[in-house]
Image (cartoon, rainbow, N blue to C red):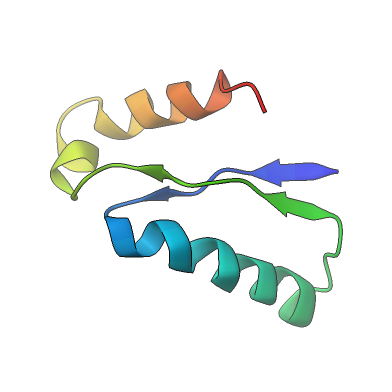
Length: 66
């Protein structure tokens, strides 16, 4: 089973994005074996837009054990 860890900007997206991605993956794309894990919160776009920001979150998610 494939796993997806979303990276989001704020607290509201932590709860909303997994629901949205599950619905899109199954109803629109037909993927029923995709596991959406709890998103990593960047606490605003500043955490993502600074130099190396996105890379830091991707590295964290890549080494995450779940």
